[in-house]
Image (cartoon, rainbow, N blue to C red; front, top):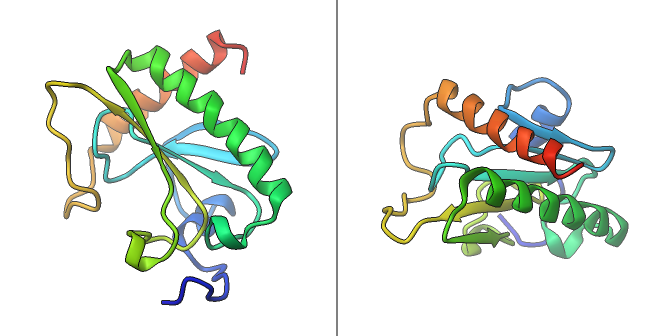
Length: 148
């Protein structure tokens, strides 16, 4: 896959946005959707995807990026409140060589705990959906407390 390839509207995140695939939703705004990563690297690992089409940061419209990063900040604040981690990783990959595996722009919000092992991304088995739904509810409650 090329870094500058064409956006594929059949990617899994586009399907989630259209309601054709399930997710453990955390928050939805006019601009973005936040949901739990099915293959989390840590408890509370959340994804934020813009609703506008874009393969990566480099080919996404600036207005879409601007709205999306504000939602990333809100969700990161809620993850911080909900899980009280020692730190939070916010990351985004551009192109297959950089680790991008779904070619729809997305941001990872990953709580980090000093004494907790860090899971490998894309492990072979997805997380338990009941656990993910409980984590999503915890983050959504924090968002509500934050007024988001």
